[in-house]
Image (cartoon, rainbow, N blue to C red):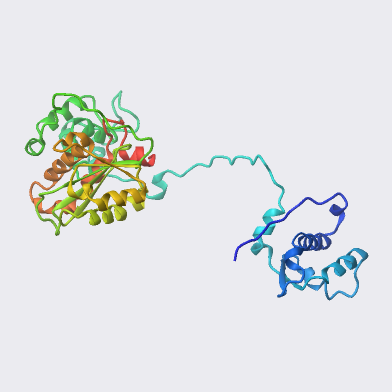
Length: 380
């Protein structure tokens, strides 16, 4: 069942003098007049619901005033019964009786509770050690109020924590500085961080050069909103980990947010579409453009028809030229580097650490935007 029509109007000057019972009865009369072509002579009796209980007795009343008597004669032309419904359940007709305000007043902004009041503040063990080392002594001049001053004996430990934690996964100098500067401070922080990162043996063994090749590339257009334009690719040849050997990488070209999805093997076009629907599209919506290489999954008729049905354009890179999909290729490199760094002792556990590498990338600022992907895509 659904409504066929709605009706409301203002009371005239004389009608405003009616008591509550007569006003409610007037509403019934106006409705029957307005929809007489539907209701008069109907095959089945109909019900008039009202939140004024006294109207149930109007047909049984022995004494009526002149107005009610005239209306009662009009009501005899219709086969209906009056039934009572509490005002709390009679919300739709009640809304039409309210005074319309074309310029509603804006609500006063309410203070939102800080996250610490909801989930509690997150405290790392290294913070406790720094506080104990300071012994309650005041911070030196130049130290921001919301940062902890790190004494010289704990600085290597703080840098090691920020650089090797699963929440950061061996980032470069700039990102390691970002992790430290959110909580700690000391005067010579940047040169000490740079010295540590450049001397990190794990990074030296697992990271490759990112120097650009000679020549010019035409950049892809900048999207206007998150997850409207994405790039996808596969990382293959990984050691077996929990039955998985392949990672599907999906990059939002606007916010630089990534999604890493472990898979048992290189999927077909149909399997790729199912994985994208389950993990990406149901969360972020359908994209406008999908950039990929010329893998067999992406040049197939099934993939092209799938993208046509969801309204996405298929953009393929040049053959043997991965630089055309530079964002995804760069993310693939960072993924492999991050996994090598956090699983250097046991490479077969990369599947378990994949979520940490994804979180580390999405929570740290990127050089392209100056903000973290979480901030660009979600606003916080």
